[in-house]
Image (tube, rainbow, N blue to C red; front, side, top):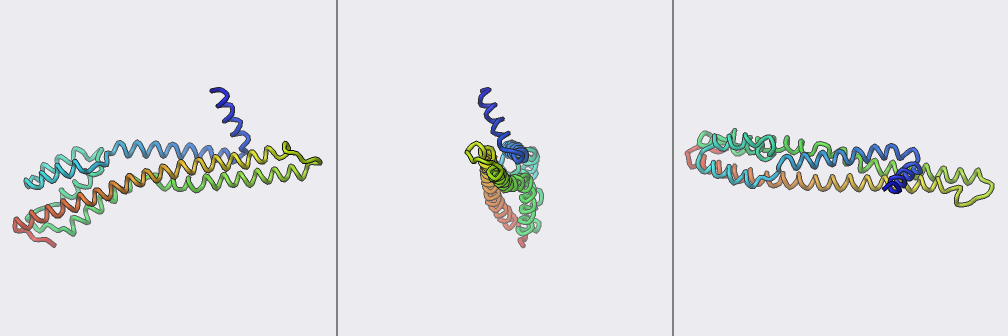
Amino acid sequence: MENASFSVFELFKLGGVFMWPLLLFSIATVAISIERAVYLIYHNLNVDDLALTVSGYVKENNYSAAADYLSELTKRRMGARVLLGLISRSNPGKNFSEHRAERVVETEAMNCINSLENGFNFLTALGSLSPLTGFLGTVSGMIGAFRSIAEATEVNAQIVANGIYEALITTVFGLVIAIIAMIAHSIFSHIVDKFASKTEGVCSDLIIQIANQSAGAGGKKD
């Protein structure tokens, strides 16, 4: 264990000055990834169970019970926030407007998605900056290597070793950070996109259900 730690420390030293920004990038990437993972897990993004329960209340014309049910879940369920916005503004039998309901759902869903995607731009930026910083270290290392060659009376591998170390190590570290950042971004984006698609479908079904009840009760639809 001590040898491994010593080896990593030595690699960091050999990487040169550009290892410091790469270290900051790696810490930021891990911190943002962990924070987003915890946030997405905490805010349960499943909407199937919510849709089933709310649909049952809607069939019974018990919108107040549906609103109470969803209100208790809004703290940890993003889907509950969107459905609550729909149910709270649904007034079957009294000029229920599908268009207005869709706009309410879109607005609330966008707010939830923005909250879920908070930090995604930083992961994208880190995924771009890390390899560029690594390549900058590569250029710096090669410049150092060629300068050593120019200043030496006899050229051997040991003279250029430090410059080549710096060039290769910064490249590797930059690419590793970028890979982690982009993988995290892709996974999180897929989860959010799946939630958005599922929520859209659930809300569309509920709007149709409410509109049909409104029509059956003698209401008007836009």
